[in-house]
Amino acid sequence: MASNNHRWFVIVMLWFVCFLNYADRQAIFALFPLLRADLHLSDLQLALVGSSFMWMYAIVGLLAGWLGDWLSRKGLISAGLLLWIFVAAATVVARSYKQLVLLRALGGISEACFFPAAMSLISAYHGPQTRSRAMSILQSAVYTGTIAGGTIASIVGAHFGWRSNFMLFGALGLLLFFVLLIFLKEPDRGVEERASAEAKNESARISLPVLLADIFTEPLALRLMAVFIGANFVAMIFMVWLPSFLYRKFHMSLAMAGVSSTLYLQLASVGGVLLGGVMADMLARRNRGGRMMTQACGLLLGAPFLFLTGTAMSVGVLIAGMIGFGFCKGIYDSNIWASLHDVVRPECRATVVGITNSLGWLGGGIGPLILAAASERYGQSACLSATSVVYLLIACLLLWNARLANRRRVAG
Image 1 (cartoon, rainbow, N blue to C red):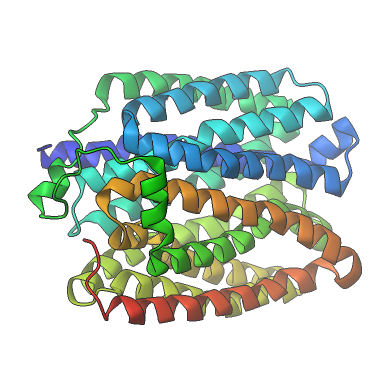
Image 2: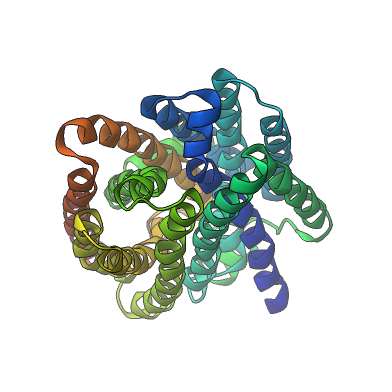
């Protein structure tokens, strides 16, 4: 069994991989105004640049999840990072719209390898007593990476051009790759689960059809997937279009729009995700649906702030809306994977994360396109505010799921 210090060092290493992944994702959106000018792109073409990543991420997610339950999780994470480094380097020399779309799609492949294997590793190292906290710490890298990506890209891009960002990210990724090779260890599958009486024989490998049958016949898991699709639909809309929204509506500079669209929302999310992890671990000891109830609380409280962000007429009100939305989003995000791992067998953990990621990013990839089309008729402000309805609907679905989970025993 791994030492307590090593368990948390694993979280640190995975945190930096996740940080770079999300810095890369947000950087491209903050650079939209520069890409529009350099490559002469329309809003729809820009949306397709973002969506090409999301759709490829979704397509590869199922396979990546299954491989995470069969192969070395360290190897899968390292191989994905190596491909990510190649994509960053190739983006530096990209000269056309088609090349950019292709490279973003390849980036989706590289990053799809990370989350299923990483979350399976965390569940192997951390039992039910610390799982939500461990996963919420990793989730905080999503927000800090998004802040760094948007901030660095907008500032560096304004001074040195949009390509310089990917040169910087690629160099950092190469350094991290060698750290993983040396220090990240692949645990014996099932050791942590057997120590906590979670699994009878996790070391056995199960075929993909059996894994899929287990997952898609579990109603609690299916409803959690549906909630994630809705939440990701909203998140991707704001990730893609919030920088441009601030640039156009409030006449911010490119750098200010990039910083403002990420700093307030994502920094608040860090606080929310850490609080959500602690809350969920406490509630889950007494209530089998405790993690889902924590998530539902975040969505219900976040809906009014979503509405406020879209309708704000002053920068002060806008900032208040982004901070509130970000904090509540963090509470929901803290238990996305921990809730899923509560309702499926340990043998299915990487696969269920891969499937859920795939479905969620398919929904996320559609969101920016729908908003771009709807904004032409109803305006961007009204469309951003309308996403609050999605939050309310999926919050109700989560509460129902939590109630059903309390009626029967679920996996630890």
